[in-house]
Image (tube, rainbow, N blue to C red; front, top):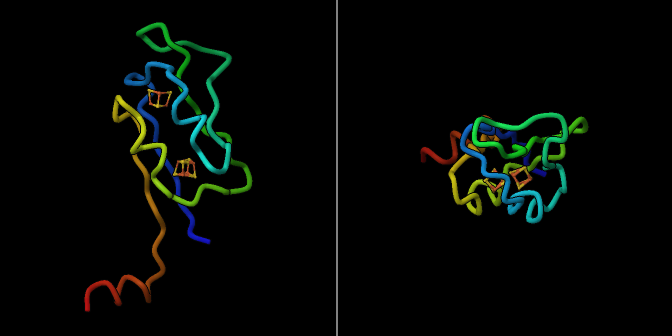
Length: 83
Ligand code: SF4
Ligand code: SF4
């Protein structure tokens, strides 16, 4: 299974919950302890077991482009991509 990680720009998040409802690993949640400058609870990732696959669904569905996804690629696959 591919591994990934995400970065969330909390300042852009409008708390719509679309990403939390569509993450297949159910590792995205609305923060309960803070608000951003717009007054929304931003999304946060809770992924202690490293379940994120880098599928990018959260980034694609986010209307504010607040999520950036990084997917880990094995070195041998990276070489194969260049051929
Ligand atoms: S990249 Fe996929 S698995 Fe990772 S947080 Fe986003 S929707 Fe969930
Ligand atoms: S989809 Fe985007 S704007 Fe909506 S909660 Fe997720 S990060 Fe925030």
